[in-house]
Amino acid sequence: MLFPLVWPAVFIAAEAALGYTIFLPLVVGAVIGRTHMNKRTALLLALALVGLAVVALAGWGLPPAQSGGLLVAGDRPVARLASGQSSQPWGGVATGDAGPYDDDDWSDMYAILFTADRATQGVISTTQSSYAGLLAVTSPNSVTVRTASGAAVVDGKFYWSDGNVDQTIVVPGSGSNYYRIVLRKSWSAQTVRNTLVGPETGSYPSLTQTDGTTWELPLARVVVTSGGAVTVTDDRAFMAWAGEVPGTSIGTDQLKDEGVTAAKIDN
Image (cartoon, rainbow, N blue to C red; front, side, top):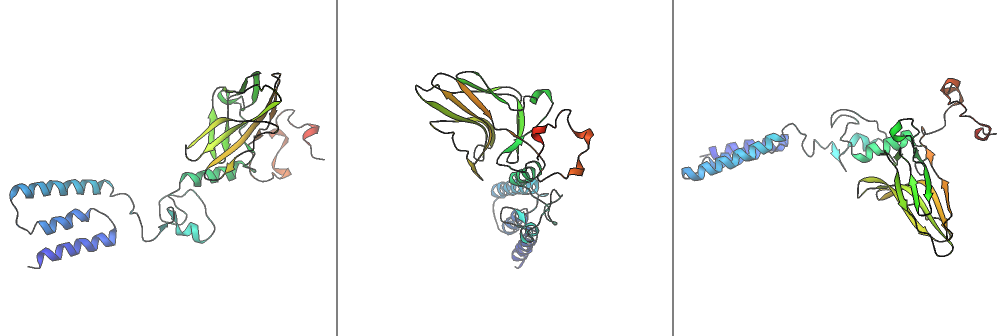
């Protein structure tokens, strides 16, 4: 008489210890298997249990949602939260600074590696033909602002464009219209896109740089007068390793020909 109670207890204990849902169909099966039912009902229940077992087995190689208390608060391992120190990437999901890593983890790493000032820097200097325009902004006519091809790291997100991107500006009836061309990183849209901000009258639009919402990397400021005269001011700052480079770290063979000018030498 105790048999129907023994096996469910064993499976429940295994479920609690190992955290895998495969034991749930076995628990139900052990209970139902000791009850009286007709063949049709038994067959339907057996098929249902097999289906549950297949679903559970599909996730057999995955870690449980909570692995011995190692994963907490946004799936960040305790070791990475408690010490105030971290390193990445590592294999697995439990030992030391192992993942799982989310997109913000990688973005933060790239932002730290490649931009000393994430508010302004990010355009990538490259000679690859598809991106050699370096995101330079020009105005081919009084109503068009054009951004050339190029690539950038925008607050840790890699962006590229292999062609021109045109934006339309408005010639005002009087005075001047002020715009910005930015690369806008949007958390909600999960994109980085070339964006025209404005117009404003009297001054350039402010940049939006809010973590978790919107981050704008400036490329250029644009002003157009009522007479259709367009002035573009280059705001690009190229990607650089974070921090200062020691003077002994760069040899003359690493410098671009005519890349050092009197204007660039800090007196």
